[in-house]
Image (tube, rainbow, N blue to C red; front, side, top):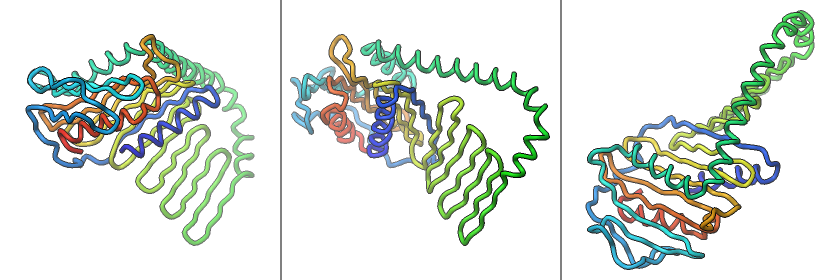
Amino acid sequence: MRLLLATICTACLMTAACDGDSVRISTTTTDTGAKGVLKVVDTLQCPETIGVLTRKGTAHAGGTTCLYTGPRGAEVSLQLIALTDQGADAVLRRLENALSADMPHTTAELRASADAARAQASADQAQVQADIAATEADKARAEADAAADRASVRAPGMAIDAQGDRATVRLPGMSVDANGDKASVRIGGFSINADDSTGEARITSSDESVSVQAHDNAAEIRTNAPGDATRRTYLLTDSRPADQGWRLVGFEARGPVGGPIVIATVHAKDRDSDGVFDSAKDLVTLNVGE
């Protein structure tokens, strides 16, 4: 998951930074199998150092909280949270809200970008409806043009068919279906469905779920592994610092069904995190496993 997450983060941030457009990617998963058994723990393991992190003092609250520092004033809080009267979703939703509040300008920009994208999609849909009458009037001519544009290619292991703005491509291990502004690509275990009219894409993989929204130099990223156990990542990044200097906030959360869950919460002043986030993940792995 770490490699895929890094790849998607880099691609989205580069795209947003280069052209200023918004990028929204959401994914679903097709595999409900668990990655492995996560441990049930009642107290945290808090080594003095791990990766780029150094522990501050000793464990707090009976071994359920440990604090760490990292490069450039980064802060990591490791917590063990029981789920006696609440579900993991509720706990992590509150944590997301709290982290978003630490970078309010980033959150506001991303929300405004999402609202603008939805408004544009609604306007485009209205325009489509307005054009229906004209389209119907030109139907006969359009059919004649489409017939003239028809093409078909066949070769061993390959099939290509095109007509007008529709096309299908079949190759070993890959298929492409395009229809106007919409396209679907399937390569191995991945599936990408894109709609140019709304600027959205949905990526489906066989073992995890990733959601990315990026605008200019800001991005909000979520990952969620399949199965009943909790395996989630949340990241909010921006090239512009918040009032306290944070350019990256987020968490890594894991735990068995029914809890407790171990959460490493990260605040960093470098959007690349200087290895802080990877070290925070290592802390979680040390306590509950992959």
